[in-house]
Image (cartoon, rainbow, N blue to C red; front, side, top):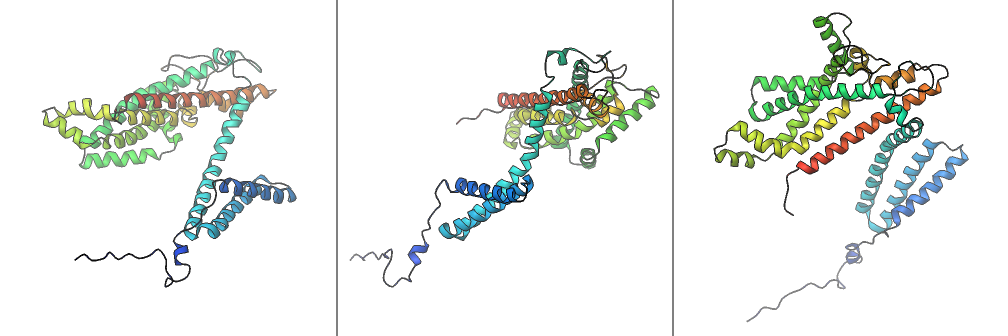
Length: 362
């Protein structure tokens, strides 16, 4: 004897009125956010125009009106939850755009003002014997590449070896002490690194020892903790299964690190190294103290002062001659060149990450 299957109808006369309607909510059209934003911008522009049109007032009014309008509209059509979600989305998006505004402003300003002298002469001439208009930053570009290259050669092996020790071998008091000092070094001001390098070279080589290598040492003090931290995190991300599989085949630990761990983490490590270089390549304070500046080209980092782009831009902007326009133009062009170098370094890091990243089957 079969038992009849009982089923509840979707709605009946005994259901409370409106219960089935509450289960399904409406939704705003796809153009709703853009329409609300357009209305908010127009209303904010009208209000700001009546008060003298302040950009700050206009932006704040647009954000407030857009958020309030989207919340009210969504509350009536989609319910309280969806309205709250749309309101928080609007707040987070507005905060992101507001935080991005200064960066975009800086980029536009540097490009517009630096493009005036951006040409072959700027990259092939130094400032030796130049007063007023003319000259270039060839000596500063070469000085920046030399000091940053030396700092990278010193920092990467030390930082990578330290990260390997902390992850693969550490765990005792020494590892905890190293971690503590790395944390301390991460937060030191850049001027302290310059003073350290200057004091070190003064004690070893005598007073007044200022050269490119001293500046590289100062930059390496700033780079090492960044390389250690980034490399440590990337090595930690290597799965333990890879290590255990290599150990099961009888491979020594040092070979596992060289052949398994580092190739797997090389993409993230290269990105961390590039970020460390980008962090120090624009430093001015330590190079002012440890490297100094010169108007001539100096390829020897162990003898004499050496110009760098950051210091060159600082002096051209802080102490312009008469007339000041050529000096200010060179300062902006040096800043643009420095920004382009950092961009190229990031592109190189991305390329290395894509090339060396572990291949996965889709």
